[in-house]
Length: 263
Image 1 (cartoon, rainbow, N blue to C red):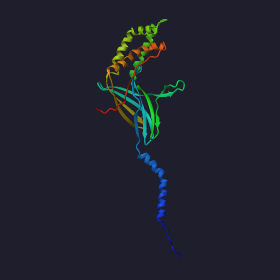
Image 2 (cartoon, one colour; image 1 turned 90 degrees about the vertical axis):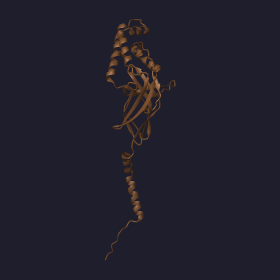
Image 3 (cartoon, rainbow, N blue to C red; image 1 turned 30 degrees about the vertical axis):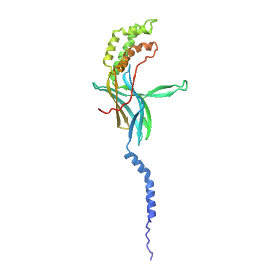
Image 4 (cartoon, rainbow, N blue to C red; image 1 turned 90 degrees about the horizontal axis):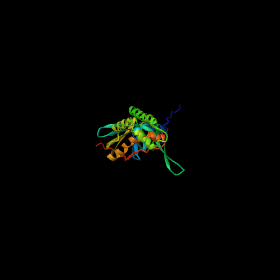
């Protein structure tokens, strides 16, 4: 009569089998951990000053910094800015318009800046991505009104130009027009960069619906506000500069990033 035998795994064989199974499962366990347990974190690190502008586009800002993605890659879909003037709570709503890119020129050894239209970009996990962004107003009604003002100035300038007129004479004649004075008063009335304290809220939208917000603060004194206000006259007279192919030199302000403590 044949004797039955039973195969019993030794302790060594059990350990070896468990290790083999874990080795097979390890890639899947890592993927599951990365997907469900490691939370993505997006940070903004300022690396330059906030620049405040006013010209024919109205009031807007430029800022630069570095975006950091921790644990996972992030696709930045949009960057928006809201500026709030504290005294009257007036808001300036802006959205990214273009990326300013420093380019080194071998001829002359100077760095110049080029621009490209803002678009979504990817920041790899645990890496840094530098951004230098110019923002534009999202107020379509205001933008259309500014376009109307400067188109009217260009049309009226054409009616007062005559042969051999100098650029100074052209600007003087333009400033004497009633529409010029009316538009100047309107732009002064609606001028945003007044002497006051401001809060700027930066919102980074990434991946599907995630957002990260940062608040900074700065102040504008009377002399700084007056220097920016001078850009109103320059903007109205820039239609003359265009005809004479002269660059209009607009004033702008630079402010340090200071985190708003909410007080």
